[in-house]
Structure formats: structure tokens, C-alpha cells
Image 1: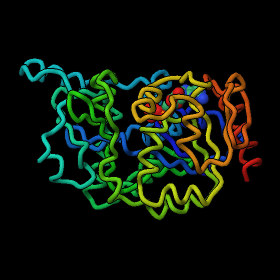
Image 2: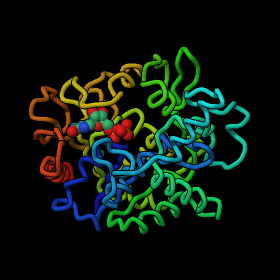
Image 3: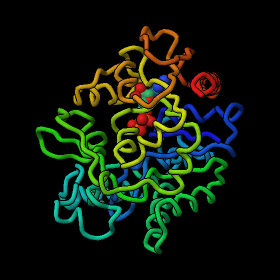
Image 4: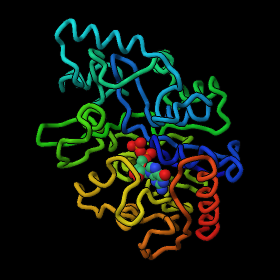
Length: 330
Ligand code: GDP
């Protein structure tokens, strides 16, 4: 058995063509939930859903989120209504007193559905309605995720990192912004003063995650701040990683990031935005997979390959390097 820690892009891309190397039936994916939001009352789990949709064979592989060829009639009507009613188009994070009332899992991640600042397709929305309704019926997020995984026919087991709310909040000169407001709503433009994982101190790993962290762990190419950071902030998570074999794939080639806001976020937290900074962020990692053009020298074993993943052949090549790194590290 092997466990992958996943955000919404890098690890799903790595897993996409990795079946010949890591048997899906022997693989667990722990998904980041720090990016989750409650939007118009429905819990949306972007990182978990990318894996759900990918493994269910319906992912839009142009964007790496949402369902391929989904319609968006409800979303478009929400935009139209807000426009007609002069309610604007921006994210509408609810006021502080509304963040902590109602369903616990929505704490510090609640947005009004007015104008729906995130694009939610119609079939995609059915997943969020089902998930939220299962929570209403008394299931945990882990249980609700299992129900959805079964409905999509997943072979891999898919786990949220916690059943409790951990909200990734970005402190900016414009005020506090949930990660999704900062990234989707404001294009990652506001200056990052600090990143906070609100709720993490009071959150816990689940029994399923604890069991998964007993197996060798792979951190696919991920944003160390907003995809892996929320996991490490949950008490006991990092301690479990220190006890098992961990291999990480760099999301950088030297100081060049493949995509997304990882470099800016790392720099804002005083970390070097590079492979070296990623290695510093993962003191528990036993080995790394780096690009063959990456000049970084590390104090831990390294397996090199071309780490650009643009298709299933690339996934398989990087997955083979990961398997080799697990051998070296274990
Ligand atoms: P999210 O989409 O914000 O949840 O992002 P993830 O944490 O899943 O992953 C984003 C990271 O993956 C970014 O820092 C990218 O640099 C990295 N990434 C994206 N594509 C590739 C690729 O083809 N190869 C490698 N090595 N890293 C990649």
C-alpha cells in the first residue's frame, strides 16, 4: 500500500498515468481540504473533487477542475440575477459573526452564493448538493467522500485530510481573504502578508488518515504552502510523516515553478521559492524526485527524471522515479 498527499493539480497529474506503477487498488489519496468553501450553503472540496472526477473518468483535463462538457445554467443564472439586482460580481465572504454559526464544517470558509464567484457546473453542483446533504444526514466528510467515490467507481481510496474545518486564510493589506477569494476572486494579486490555517489547532486526523500515514507516503508535486501546509498544520500529521518513509516530487525546477502561486506564497512566508525551499519545508522527507535540469543539491537522496507532466506517459515516467525513490528511501 502507498499513500499520496494531494492538492488539486500536481498529484492528480502524477496519478493520472501511474496505474502500471502504483496499483489503484493499493493506493490511498489524502486530499487537502484547506481550500474548501461553503458556497451558497454547499460544501465544495476542490482538491478532493479533482481526484474524484479524474478517477471517475469525467474530469475536465483542460482545466484540471470540474466535469468535462458540463453545462453551467445554474451558475449563469446566479450571475444574471446578481447583475439584475445590482449585487456586483465579486466574492461575498460572509461577515465574521456568520462564519461561526451553523454547520461546523463551514467555519471561516462561508461565502454567499450571490453572483457565485467560483464557476460551478451543473453536474459538478450535484456532487456538492449530495455531499452537503450526506453531512446533514449525519455522515462525516470521510463517509460522504466514500459514498461519492463509490458512485464514481473509484478504485483508489480517497480521504479528506480531516473531518473538521481547516480554512486557508490569506492576510493581505486589503484585509483577510479566504484562499479562494484571494486566488479565484482576486487572481492572486493582493500582497500576501501571512497565511493562516484557521481551525487546524482544533482539528484532528481521522482514523482512516492515521492508517494511511502508516504506509509509505508520496507527496506529489504540490504547493507546499496551500496544499500540504494545511495537512502539516493538523496536530499529529507531521509526527506521523516522521515515522514513515516519505518521498516528495518538487513542483519546481531549481527556482522555476511549473505553475500557480507556490513561489509567491513561499516567498511571503520567508521560504526560498525553489526546490531547496521545498526540501526545507519537508524536513521529514527521506528522498526527493527532481527534474534532471534542476541544479539543486540536497542533503537527502535524489532520483532525477524529466518531471514535466503533460500526459499519461509523463505520469508513468515520474511515477517510476517515485517508486525508485521509495526504494532508496525505505
Ligand atoms: P493546487 O492546484 O493549487 O491545489 O495545486 P497543487 O498543490 O496540486 O499543485 C500545484 C503545484 O504543482 C505547483 O506548484 C506547480 O509548480 C506543480 N506542477 C504543476 N504541473 C507540474 C508538472 O508537470 N510537473 C511538476 N513537477 N510540477 C508541476
